[in-house]
Image (cartoon, rainbow, N blue to C red; front, top):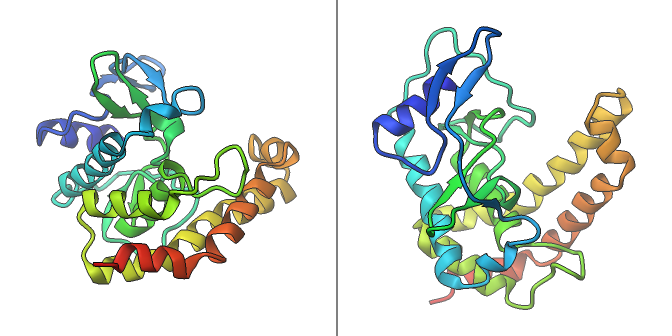
Length: 225
């Protein structure tokens, strides 16, 4: 992670903490990112389409920034859910609970611990689930979800082939969270077993079903002229 964050800052990407070094206990030390985590209390900040588009562009800029990143030979990654393919070093948890909104309008992503080899559109599909959001929960389900999906895709710059590829990934990436929690809970691995017991697995499954049942709607929104 240290090498990745160093690279991001060397190429001018500022929406991530800057590494400061390693402390005497072998822990990575990063700069503090001032502001407030968007989820859940400040999610209304993303109601405005321009802010949703800003987030999509931040993700695109990150993906572009890592295109020429070469991990060190001894790099150790902690990817929890392997992606369907590998073309970049991905964040793997681009979601509103890892987005900090600063007091002066700046945005930054935190929690880079699970970064590692991954697939760009796998990262995008996960981000779309969280930032649209594509949720089955009545408190978070949005009647304008398809439109917001289009706003995100346009701002990120997805071409037609990528849009067609991303739509089926939306459900599979969301369902992978349910499957991961289920499998870890069966082994008694924490904190995942506790999250499963609290119902997070059911929430991810419900979201996956909601997304999969509306694939035609998402495809139409992303491909309409």
